[in-house]
View 1 (tube, rainbow, N blue to C red):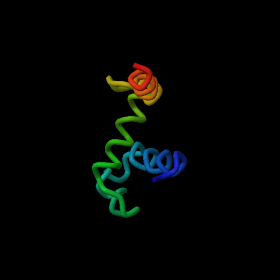
View 2 (view 1 turned 135 degrees about the vertical axis):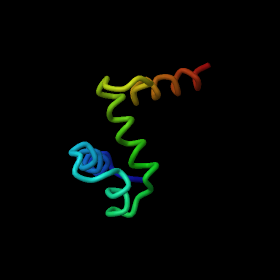
View 3 (view 1 turned 120 degrees about the vertical axis):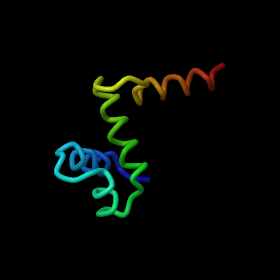
View 4 (view 1 turned 90 degrees about the vertical axis):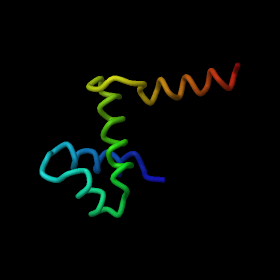
Length: 67
């Protein structure tokens, strides 16, 4: 499992726009799908994309366990 710091570094590299997600994934021996997910989730957490934030996902998981 990757650390949050590593994921943030990968996302920043993709967001700069100088390299595609595929190129970044290849450079760091990652799957392009994982890199694209990290970028998408970061944008969702920042309110730039629709969807559940990480904190909302965690709360939903907690509530499902309680139920």
